[in-house]
Image 1 (cartoon, rainbow, N blue to C red):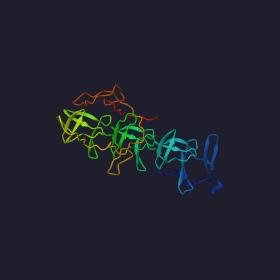
Image 2 (cartoon, helix red, strand yellow):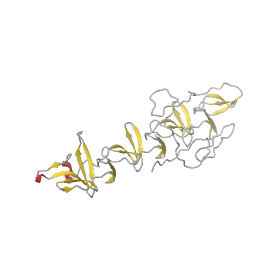
Image 3 (cartoon, one colour):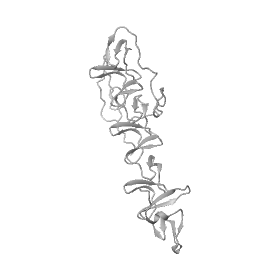
Length: 319
């Protein structure tokens, strides 16, 4: 909506405006069908009204083709607007039918796009309501707080399955494959879940420790056998003796999920948001990650991958 008022509506002020000719008044009237506005005795229709408020600004109203004040949702010139019960055009946040929407300062509802509001990023669906939970957007997954809707970054944990995910601190994209975080290497499955244990890529074996950090330049005692790993993390052989040195262990090595880290240190906290789990696309799959000492166990459930981690998928959200 252009920030203009058409025709005579430019001259309208709060309440009744008295005109010189015949002392005719511009004023609100109502009947059984709603409120309408008379200007010099003529009903205003298919037009915007701009009226001063008590704070030095303006309030906008729209009079429909029948001349009645619009309330609720209205599509005008290809854009959606929301008018409160008193007829005033909404701006900013509005909760309608249990869902949240955001209207620009010109009243246009944000549709099918990202919007940064007060430093946080939100995504609004094609019908304008604020998205929550896992969302697949332009080929990447993002996680939006299930209550506040803001995009979460950093480490996330599914409280039902204990699967961990990582969303880039800048872009918010869910990590898959190898990801270096604060100098340590981690591996995330196609589902986004943090992998632990043996991992085979091509003919090379790697080992991801319980905190998710890739073992590198060290020897680990795994189930009674000493395994040696090179500086690039590749398994290089076994030894009958040796001292197990855990690389990169830091008591959980989990960062806060409430936004980009502002300190060099890390915490062991997780997001308070209890993820109920995203939807599922496709059946469970085995990634081929096996250990030299045995095969990977599988989970016979389409909601989980071969490692028992929840598979994220497209969550359409409320209709």
